[in-house]
Image (cartoon, rainbow, N blue to C red; front, side, top):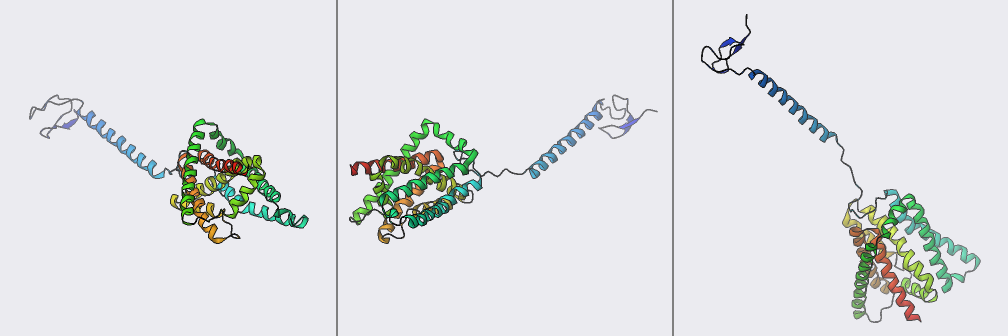
Length: 300
């Protein structure tokens, strides 16, 4: 007995080997059943693919990136914090220790210009060495970008803009307060520059800016930015401003001068944010070197 199947047209049972329905005359396709089965199999495969894709999307963990800028160095959180805390706390402790020892040996030495110069130069040398130790294997990654000529062109350009920004503020503030003097920090630096010009160019013009950029841009700003960029700008600029504030000096003079440092901090954070550490460092160094060179000429 032949196997029966339904006619797709009239629905009556007919022999499976018939090519046309004897009741309605409908022409039968020998591969009709195969097509239906293939379509069912195809639908099942498609369903499996959809389920697999949804499963992969749900189980796939997004990669959390610390950096939001393509120019920024991929330095660990711990190293960033160490760079900042060493500059803000470590150097203060070392400075205090040097003062205690000096007072025991020669209490008048620190009051001399030579004593002040030795302490400042030594602290920056120590700071630079410790920064390199903290960065360790990341030193190659960081300093590699300083080999590009375009970096220096950008850095010097931003440095000139920083000088214009600071000069504009100074012109405005001296217009209202013509007798305003520089703060104690700047006065001390100017005296040291006049007495030790070559060392000042190396320390205050190159090593100092590098240390400060490591600490306040790469360290503090780079760390805070992962939480909130605006917060990072504000905190970094304020701290950068107040590290140049002398609480033992004339408060009126210090308060009028500190906005210049805060604006410089904001500007350098911006340069670091859009161009990277190497550009902000060169901009910072350009600003310092111009100031040092002008001071040297004034003292000749």
